Length: 187
Image (cartoon, rainbow, N blue to C red):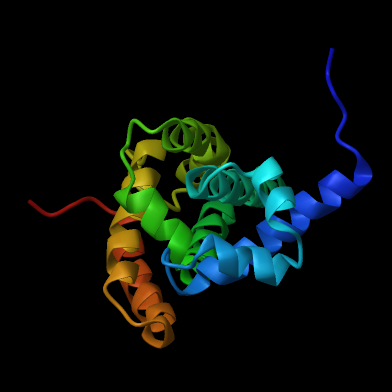
């Protein structure tokens, strides 16, 4: 029997996630107390939803994957959809460096990371297929390459101050994206 969450509980959870999303924009060092204060909820309410920092970050990662899925749904079948999805991913990474830190530096066997990685391939599969069919990306491009691309960008983002991060990520994405586009690699 599925238990339906009360409307106030759903609102509180959404407030917590919104506050955490903002709090972790400058890095993963934001405290849970800061998130609780920003969400304007009590400690008990917070811990009812998220027993620890890890569960909060896992929920933010799941939310980010949901947003990426929504973007994939919007560009389904579009030859330019892959490029648009990469741009969307880079924009979100620029805003969510704390989540990027979590994604890049967490144990790859962590359940939240494994779940996100399992979702990433199917999310990008249609966009890659459409781009390949239109000759807009490398013929050998795979969803696993997108995961590698994300990790590479995450490492770049981690090395810059928040005010420089967007420019650095944009430049790195431009350089790396060139490797994803349709032309053979030179030996």
